[in-house]
Image (cartoon, rainbow, N blue to C red; front, top):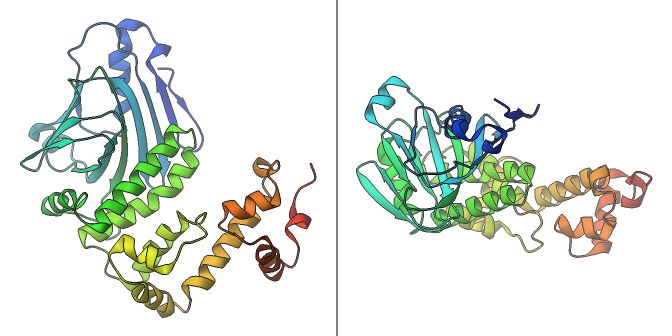
Length: 315
């Protein structure tokens, strides 16, 4: 195979790298490390031209495929033969398709996520589409996130009907958009809020310390929003701003102080990075959520003992 693999754990596979007669088998092999024990079925004709990318994200995997319409099937026999304690949060940006799982058949529209439990059979059917684009976040069951079959059904029912479910769907769409835009490192950073919101929907986020991490993960994904407030973060979890403040207070922090420090640390990182050297200080400040340049300079000097300009590498 000619799959390329970076040191970060990224895998990129293109069927155009192999002879036409071998392309579907090549594609199935590329998927096998992410979609464990799933049988891929293609009944089309012609050349199978497809792309597949995957990225390691804190022990989980974020994957993307662009392929001719086909069916992915994990039957009862494969569940027994290839056990896999993980869930997949799937989202397609290519329009309607069908998913059969936990005794239900779901007709999903463009941009609508669904959670699949790899410990139960499922069928993902794109056979009616000429081509489709699918994103998957594979999450291992660990660290208190161990949703049952019933949890998965409940989460899928809540995705479109509850505030937290809609927040998760929005976050998942933004994460996928970053992959499409060629910014997998940004998408990887956005995976943490997705996992956190899944935990809330599953009812597994019960410890104050863990909830603090989840609240921070959601806030970090929105640092660029200068209007971000505690009630915005609480809305993602279905809790009030007072609850958010109480969780931070229990850890000896305040939301406002923590948020400012996070924005300043992000600005410091970008100002020192060669990747941002062509951006002005004002642009970087705005990208980190600062609306007032004077406030940014004053806060930056107070935290780091230097001005933003003094930190910048020479061009």
